[in-house]
Length: 150
Image (cartoon, rainbow, N blue to C red; front, side, top):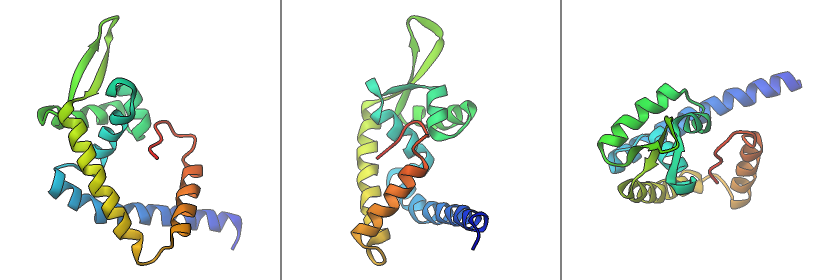
């Protein structure tokens, strides 16, 4: 297989893996915690940010999404009380998305669920060494992206 074909096959397998993960992990997270995977990723970024707050533009970069997508994602999270908007007292043009106390609690709970589901997902086919190797390769692949979540 040529390098070009191997790269193409790898990209197609990554797309397929993404679809598989979304189908396998998304519905249980939604039914247990009322969160989609993208919403959880947004909340996880905020949980790891200084002061649990980020500008929408920074969240958009971390999530590989547009600012309008982040705004649309944040609105229902505001209504549920998981995030709130906060203005910058020094610059009225800047607004932050801030994780609330309720948001921190739901992130902790949802991450526990995601950890358990991740263990079950790999348990029957993968060794710990293989899982670590996959994680390392994917980490290298996404190293240049902002907002790494270990």
